[in-house]
Image (cartoon, rainbow, N blue to C red; front, side, top):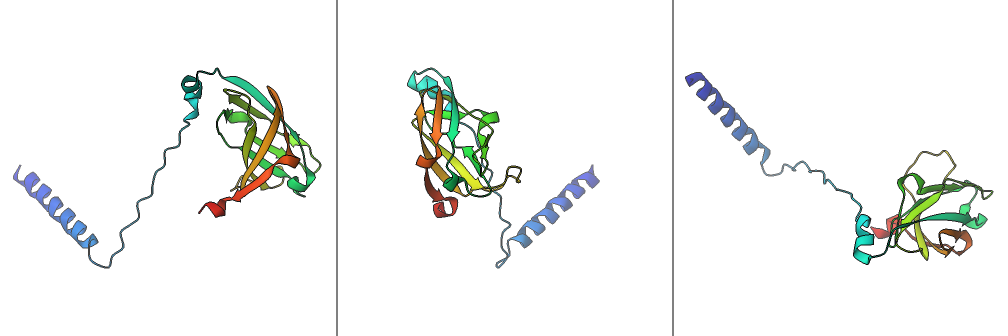
Length: 161
């Protein structure tokens, strides 16, 4: 028993010495990474508005000037009154205007405007950081159309820093 108590005291002493040594002036503390918890707040929009959920599907009317020579990757950005269904929020539009992917949304009413994170990229390019935000008015109801010629480029992400 005596050995165990002496062993515990020795460990406490060593731990205190190491902790005191780490706090010497001039030493930079090791930065602690910030953990961010990402969760959707959209799941209760129907409850707080009293409006029922409905599914909406977006089609695209491409604009070659906006698409560019490589193609255009769009990621739907959730915003009231809609959130994107997980398997259908990424769309790639080819330089010739062919759309690969689908935009399927769940909304409490038909959207008037949709927002995308965007970047120019080839179809099978590795997913990486997008360029910025794209604001697009839509026309229609359950099946709506995004006229790419009417989309407005917003700020690039670097402008938000």
